Length: 344
Ligand code: PMP
Image (tube, rainbow, N blue to C red; front, side, top):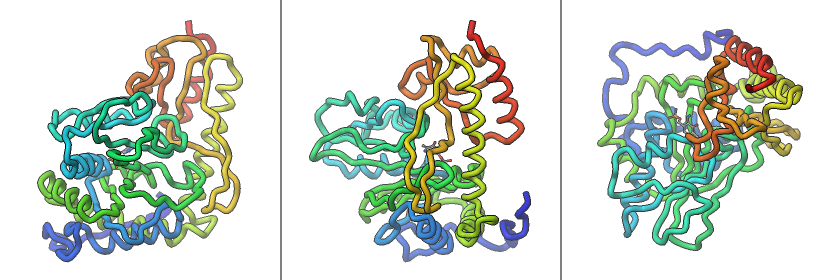
């Protein structure tokens, strides 16, 4: 709200009417300015390699995740391809991998207990949703495996940036950088042109590309983030980090003052972007209950809504709490949590 001018986008009524953006690009509906803005931001933050990569834009990274499942499995010689993720995993992967009942792939659940023969795709979310830990693949096989790295939260306001990630298929989203989830803009950085082409094929059938208005708005905002990221008083990432840090401190204070709840502890690490050692301040809190109780239902009785741990392939004694609500809502949440001393 304070930064109205530079982040405002005006689009003429006659502009951006075509399906096409750049017919020479593998991703022909990607606006070249957005591609440049994405590369510039990753370059400035130092969180991912964009050189020698194809950028595929999607209607959120949700669409790209499905495009990637389609691409990797349709290029596999054996189908259906097993899809796995280590528990606790982002609950939407289950739906994304199951709801079409595709013959190309099949949701197989926890990657740690996966022992089926044949090709597989492992979803690796780092930092992880729901519990904020940095993750690596866990299925340890020399062949037959592909990995989709979901880096939705690999930004300095959530976690120390320790290296430029350099994997075959990496997903990012505008939604979790600034919170512009409604623009529905995500992107994939893809090494293999055949995989990129198949993803574009999926997107072509699914939605014939991605809204140009959204791409234009994302371009303006991402460029502004890049331009200001080294200016302490202007940087969105400085602001975001301070906001997350103070919310986590307040939450920990309440949790530690009682004997009811648990929270994960995160190791500190040197953040290449901030140039100092910081701790992880994830977008979600993985709140646990010291007793064996259904924490989601208990909190609901106290007017606190959270997604239950069972939705993430884990236990009902855990819930996932969003740390990204508006200040007022977060404050009310803390107030309610502070009143819950005894879960009877
Ligand atoms: N991946 C992860 C790990 C997420 O948490 C989310 C949003 N909750 C997404 C992908 C999807 O984001 P979007 O479709 O808005 O880009």
